[in-house]
Image (cartoon, rainbow, N blue to C red; front, side, top):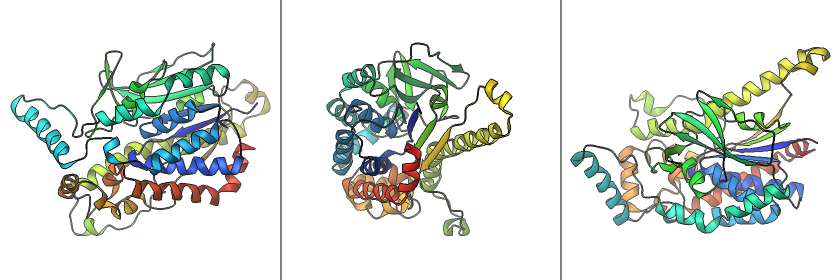
Length: 369
């Protein structure tokens, strides 16, 4: 039996694109249950992954839930975004830094996100679906700040599976809960760290050297990767010609690096290993630990940063002001697109994800064949 894995990358509000892609996959396949044996998620991808795992026995229901969430989302469901609440959060962090001479480590109050996850996801159903065989493995990736090690938390029914522990990436079996999702989604600088078993965790995309390691370790045959950024085009930048590089551009590129660069390198590594495997003799193939893995990487056809700039005014006035100081409005929409949890923007990403996937229906059908 061919084992298939789904990897959901991070990207803040860009996660809406993944929901659109999944909706199109449901439209193409017309399957009742989740068509993946393993689902892996990091950052916002872990939220989408948990919803899929929760409803692994009813794939259409999972798709409806994802579309409903992303189609009606508001910043206030993720972080306290009103002018008063945002101002209070900023002043609290500044006073902590100046008076107590220590930094609390985040700009936004994300207590609404915890409530949102608690009310939205029934984590007991994830365990039930895994035990019932609708899903073999759920992986949620986070970074431990104390050990500087990426941790793959996973829930699975593989009795013989052995944990791995590399210097920069280890695994740990867990009953996936809201804390694991919050930890994986703790966007650096903006969201607070989350404590799990006495350790502080943050966004799993930070320092993630091998995003596909979990899927490879679980010996899947195919991996579908849902990215959140278009294929980059390298063109001369007006701001660089003027000698100006605003902070928002630097921060936006840093976040893009977290959510893109290592994923692309990991996909390239898998493809190269597949090429090497084809050169081995049949005798060596039978003794080689590497098994060829097919990958399909679906990514946006349009620049999400540009799309985000069209919805700049949907955010609160104070948040717009802060982002404008950073240069997010005039120079780089990358940072804006990570934080713009507003339905005017996410609905556009939902539709983009759906249309992009329909346009690649032949490749999608071949992947699931």
